[in-house]
Image 1 (cartoon, rainbow, N blue to C red):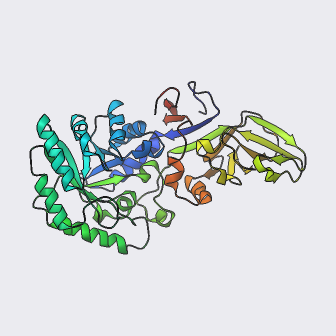
Image 2 (cartoon, rainbow, N blue to C red; image 1 turned 90 degrees about the horizontal axis):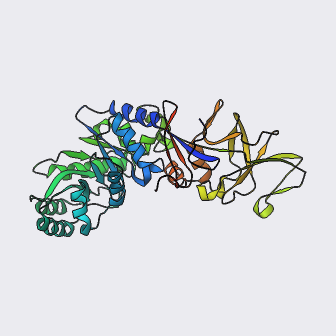
Image 3 (spheres, helix red, strand yellow; image 1 turned 90 degrees about the vertical axis):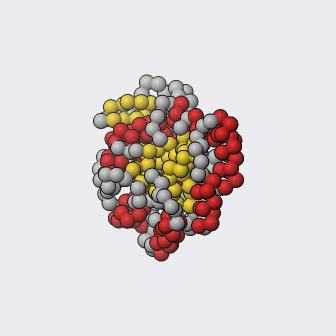
Length: 388
């Protein structure tokens, strides 16, 4: 499977929904039966496609979804997702009625927000579900003291506010040094110890915490980067509970192949010149697709062989040096398996001096996504046929 009928370029992403299901099912094996798995599908499912990943994750056993913003949650609702959704980020209080009507759970960390939310909801006789966010050492959103927690609990004690959960987020669960992590757990435990009644959902573990520390699972865990088969960091790869299966691969095809003479310059700035007579192939992918200029020199796979990108990556195209002539239309893999070799997202991240999260989130929405299940195409998402 290399193409689909409803897009018109020779560059595409494949998403293996079986890999999503595998990662969910194997994570569920690390949990107790009563513990929930929250599938994090923010940022359009880390670039994989939020709706398609959400469906696959829920079918495989996820109990809940999480996104970053109310807009992302509403998009899932509009696409027919009825499962519980938690908005992890801040939501302006003026939109609380929309969240209530759409049965979307909001993160709360501000007393004034709750006071205004109650005023709005009482006028419409509605209610909203909330999770309190505790900042135990991330330095981002959340309350930090018992006094702040008690103020929120007092404000939430009404018919229009349903306190469903409380959570925190780890800053260093993907590092070998557990000092700060254990400090965060201690602070979270201190806050929990002051609550007169424990809410249904208590969660702290991101992917790294989930797959490394069973004692931090509480009543739910949040599976983010590892839902997609990507390790939270290279340092802990061998400490994960199971071997993850990457879901995403990136492919293109040769659109021109030509032989060039010694000294021929390739791409902007003439930074590369052929050292001898060479075969050069042009690929229809560039930095506007998320394949950045810094990837000049990175290798790609063609018929199982690694070949280098030469010259500067352009906005829409880049060039590779071929060991011999290949037919136009030959498939080239930029991320994924080819023959007996594979190029992982982590390899691209290393080249870009960043993290795998940024690589997959940065792949442009103009690159079509083809969804596979049991090696069959089950959906295609692109900017023409499906609005993002």
